[in-house]
Amino acid sequence: MIDALRTRFFPAAPAIPEYQPLPEYAILYFEHLAGEWDSIPADRIDAEAKAAVERIFEKVKVRDKSKYNKDQKDKEEEGKILTWRDLYTFDLLLTRKQPLEKLSRKVWSLRSRYRDVAGLKEYEAYLASKPPDLAATTKEEELRADIEFLLGELYLRYAIMPIREKVRDQITGKVARYMFFAIMLVVLSFYASFNASSAGRISIEMAMVMIVLFSGAVGGLVSMQQRYQSVPSEGDQIDSVSELAHGFLTTFTPLFSGAIFALILFFLISAGWLKGELFPNTEGLFRKAHTFFDFLGTPDYAKLVIWSFVAGFAERFVPDTLSRFLEKRVTDSVAKS
Image 1 (cartoon, rainbow, N blue to C red):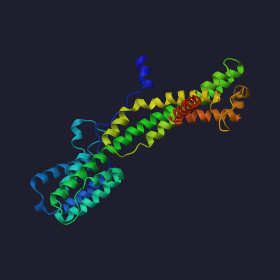
Image 2 (image 1 turned 90 degrees about the vertical axis):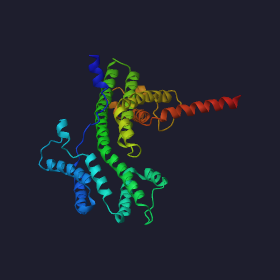
Image 3 (image 1 turned 45 degrees about the vertical axis):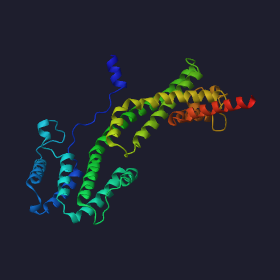
Image 4 (image 1 turned 180 degrees about the horizontal axis):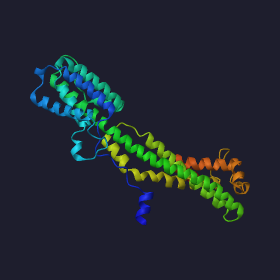
């Protein structure tokens, strides 16, 4: 029973797929590279490179004949499916057979792609490492080394990005479901709490506390979902995927902290520490609404729900507000003394 509840409410991190065939858009790029390979004179291709490319082309033949399933998990079949590793190997072999006069344009093209994929910050760090100039006097081995470095960085991102997006989509989907149920719970708590309070089964104060807690929790969930949707693609790609996959349980932290912050903000407003037109008037808050429909037409209750949501959504709002109150208290104490 306990294990079932733990699995239901605290699921394991989304699984990172162990194996991924080459997607359709990468197949188109492979065909482009194959055309370049066919244009290379036969005397420039050694036996070792030719054998490696033929093994890759054999996988293309198997794919064209539809002899495998993309979802096939049989280890014997995996060796027959074209992967990012094959495409990376093919691109490296093709680059090594390019004549010297084409290397500078190849470097320029890869640098442009790297800037688009990695982002300006990482590209500037790459330029700060002083890569070889594209002048005619640059040594051939330096240009080829730079090409292989750029290819390695590009293909690492090409292979990881689909996995990263899949993990993020899995987390976002789970959070969206939890948020939907949380919103439904808020609406039901509104209706049930006011009906119960009007019938005398619970106090209106208890109904307010329940609404504040649930509204703050929803704010925390919305904030967390936006954070996962806007995770930057820059930085270490492997570390980024690892944090997404293994930090899944931390997605529930904003739910609890949002509820707590909303309750603290409610106490700050009730104590009179936060006043103004934007904040609800708590003096008559508990006497204005007796039914759910009375609640819908009361501005003070709407302000209370909004501020409870804000307390959960803006994680630093309540802690920063408390810090300002403490600093003011210390300043006033020092001034009096």
